[in-house]
Image (cartoon, rainbow, N blue to C red; front, side):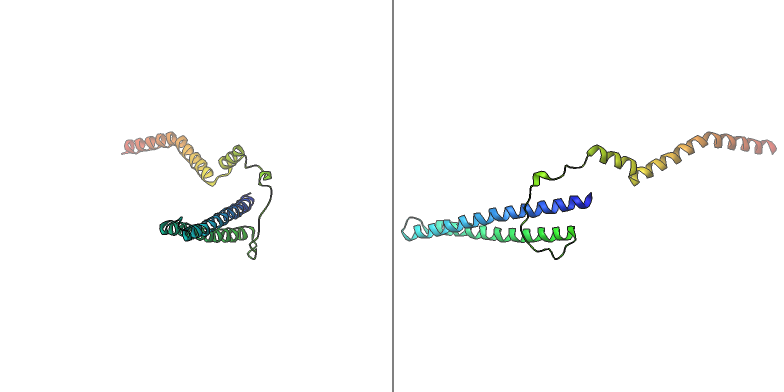
Length: 156
């Protein structure tokens, strides 16, 4: 189950990175178009130099973010390749109906499994059993120890 969740998670990360890359690409194109129009307007005197520099800065920022998103997509692919055990997996496009994914785990079943099979719970249960056994023996041990001590005193 853990492996399946890892694969689904990896696929969703790649899909998200792909969508983000498309968004960043579109933003970079829009910024580039805006920069071109701003340059044209500055040549006719309708835009001043500060506005041109501001638009160029935005364009460079969008290009930088696009490059960073490309790196994020590559990292997501590497992670997916390692999860599914295919290190030679090449970067491509992930598509599919993500609404048709299997339902999530049953919380009640998981909790029941944790309570019945957890090593920590088993340790606590065994420790509790030892303590209960010691408490049951305690009155017997104290009583016999008391009688032995009184016999030793009477013998002296």
